[in-house]
Length: 374
Image (cartoon, rainbow, N blue to C red; front, side, top):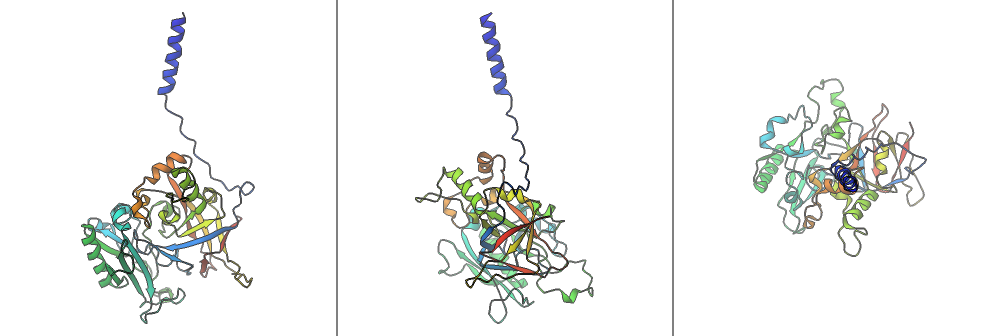
């Protein structure tokens, strides 16, 4: 009898071991102002990635004009593989998967070996102001070997991406560099179905109508518009980095994950780790910082962003674009391992709220976000 009881106990135990673990319950994201502090999110850095897959440019202020849906020229240009050429129509562009492009997803180490700069200049040679767009403005791309730095002779440029000849030369350079034929592409400045005469002459030149977005999640939640803004919480980066490297990452020479690895447009702090996910479906508005004289400007129609979705991560962030020598790490797997309730998501997509009275606005480092109550 004792032998039978022992046998049954072992059988039940082995059965429980073979039974699959219950799935981690999906986390419900909800705005919880009584539990967390959301207001006071401080903008600590701003980034623009004019060319999909290449390194970004840091800014202290970015302006979003009335007809824009993201930072000026953000992800406006891309390197489309020739084998995917029939998928892109510059007059009627649609979202394409990153596998169709030479980018951080398909060639992370190659592109991380390059340092790039993108500037917008008038034909007079001066940097163009955001509120004075001109059809003759030059979009200048310069490419260096990252190891040699900007003091070395550029590998390419400055080359003007605003003209077909400049895009053709860029195509040839990256074709030779990657060993795969690519084409530098950009969408038409105006929708192909726009009726000439119906305010067409009043639209600004170089209108940024299409963004080569990283994932389709932003597009699906923005009525098909590819233009989004990517926001990353610096405190989430720190917590994730500490989990990966055993705590105190970045101290005493230890490796640390950085916000720039995740290619954000806006980096914020003064927000609890992962609390950015609670804001999905909410709207935040820019509150300008108080200047050194104690003055704070009051915009009648401040710049507002609606948080629409989490950002799913892929192999494209496996290499730190600023420190490629750190090697490749599997970010999606690490997110799932250390934060199964969140992974493989990191960061959020936002869209510009453009009401009838929207006239554009600016966002600067030092400004804060305030949650707008529904």
